[in-house]
Length: 227
Image (cartoon, rainbow, N blue to C red):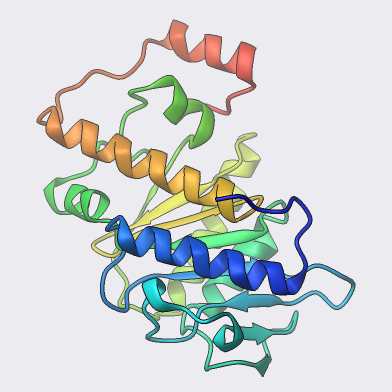
């Protein structure tokens, strides 16, 4: 999957559909679950977001919803009901250019069995988790589409920033992760690393030990990891 570093709107539409298909084919989403959005380049700004009740495996570039910076729809099929949440994430994480939400089964399974801690759903098992993902807090259950979840996640982002940490993901109880990053590819990679860490921890019977503080400190020093 080769993506341009400064894609046009047409390229972003194609790339978003490619990512959606990849996530669907590998089982990160099923049916019509999940959604993806990206910031649009240029002074006009705005976003592309998957339509409501769309299957990520069968997205069509011309049917993606385009909305302006205020969230008003300009074109395409009706935007996902999670649009308000995506916009809040972009507002509070200005470094983010993409948001992906899935119902990844290992992560949802983890919330059913019990997360490691509410402020870290899995322990820092691997250096790549520490480097690429970082802290992932649990968001308590809200019904799908509940606008209160946007306020909760916005508060989490600001709370962690006050501690000198940049959140890249949160986990919504019984629903799935919300992940954001600099572009479609890097955001998908964060999601993949998070899901794989959940799988490793569950396969260990939730008994695998985290990295030592010395190992985490090495990640901080050598890779500027935020942990």
